[in-house]
Length: 164
Image (cartoon, rainbow, N blue to C red; front, side, top):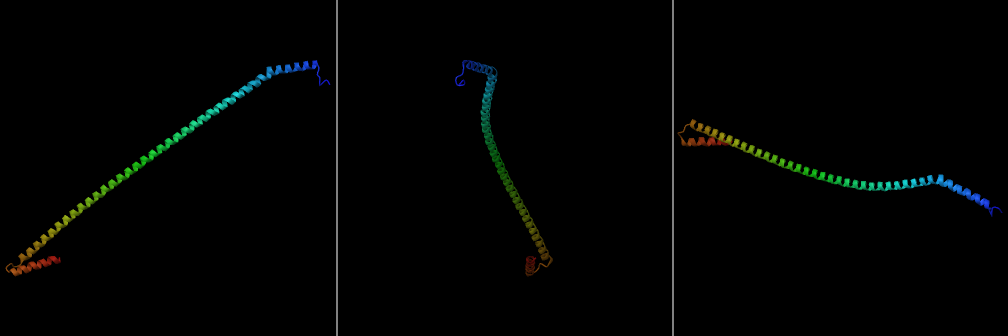
């Protein structure tokens, strides 16, 4: 029955032991435990703050990357437009030069044709003159007394000319 109804001495010693235990724990154990808990709480708070900061930086980097990507696309589009313009300019310049060269060649051919035509006409005139001189020599070489004979010589010379 002593356990159910403790004595005053037991209560006193239990209280004294419990107080001494509380004093020792309060003096030597709780301050380091509380300091460790406080440091752990601060470390968690700093880590959360750093995570928020890193998340914000990631969002800024994502925005910056998207902006850089847009700028790169715009620059690529501008370069493509410039390249197309240069290509079209080169094609147009080549067409103009080709047309000018074709016109020059045509003009040169026309001039050569005209020159050869003039040369042929000059040659033809020279041949006609030579034939005329030959006819005149033949006519003069024969007797000029008979007009009928003269006519026959001229007619025969004309026939000879058309055959040659």
